[in-house]
Length: 272
Image (cartoon, rainbow, N blue to C red; front, top):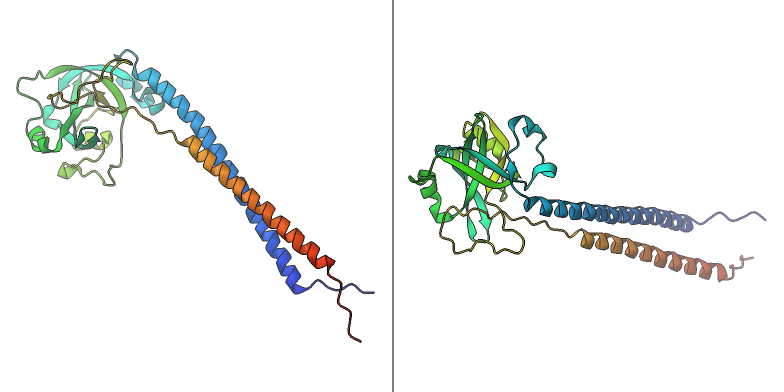
């Protein structure tokens, strides 16, 4: 006897099942890949934290010489304690927006002219908002020496602005410590591509600088802290992958039971 062709409804159902299976497998593999990527990111972040913790409490070293500036990077130099000596250029001071444990205010950024004729911008510390006009008008006290030796942490430039706003040099509005833009605006011909956060963090076990210290600008406020939520993200992606696998198993079991139920039904007798 000739076999009956597959009903159109059955073909559509099989196609739908195939599409769902492909989508489910792709989704499962994608979620597994995201979870694995977060595991790798966590290993990288833990290594970074350990490296920075060891670096930030090391003894200060001399500022990298100018020929080495192209090789200075976040991986090799960020948060490195350094020492620099030079002459302040107070007339070229700018204030960059800051949000600290003392509230909102500004970082006082003043270039330091080095002995070889180059310049490095120094973040001398934090001042509150109400002192903005004062520090723009008189960036250095009259009694302050023009030559200084600075110890602090080497930091990389922060380009493109911050606080969801773009730097406006012409208006003296700086929302990030973009050293390239500052060097251009201040006409610093040989500015280093990094800056120095003045002040060193307290050694482990020692007390930090008191928040009631009346000296401004307040140096040594660099926050060395890294968020590390990669394990949570990895567990989330793996959990979603497990949910997709469970949903696929449930759908497959349901379809198998439905197919078995149909095959168990007696075939309808043809009409005479």
